[in-house]
Image (cartoon, rainbow, N blue to C red; front, side, top):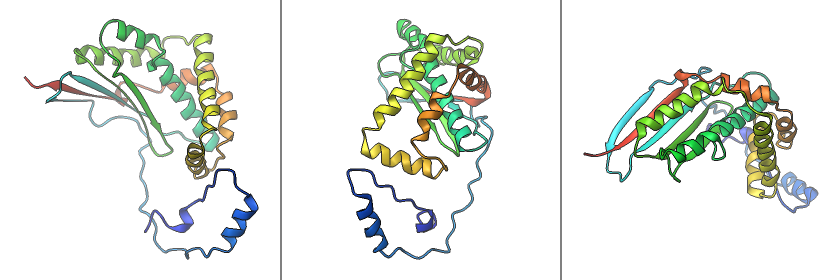
Length: 234
């Protein structure tokens, strides 16, 4: 009743439709009256320190597993600044931990990860985090390797070749996503509520520089990281 009130909603229509026909249909459709309900205020923490840096347990698993989480501090500024900051952070994480990174190749070569390795990011207006994990027979060594990678990432210069590769990859992914009607509807509604048109994201992504990625990596420190290990039962 509070969060799905009509005045808090946006209607996004994507597809081969006649705009005037849709507008006429909406004009003829009575909309619900505004409600008096209001959602509870969201108290987001602007910091990125985690409450628990490490947790482990023993489970009925065939192979131990490690999941490393990185909490992302919230971005300040207007909508364009926030989106640019999140895109730069996403590119930096992909460059450091993605399947085309030198770290991934080294971890695979050393047998610390396998094809279960995964990287997931959620970067929103109110919160953000990165999850990196894999099945591994040596979760402690993998944790050390990932934590060390985060610690030294900002000290390692980003090459022009790597920067251009990750930037082209992200811009290309954005352009390919325009072929998906459901994705367009979802992202348009998301950015409308942030005060930005979805199509503006392309120009923002193209404006990102190598320095933006370096600053994104420098914003991460050890207090932002939490590790969870699932060990095999004895």
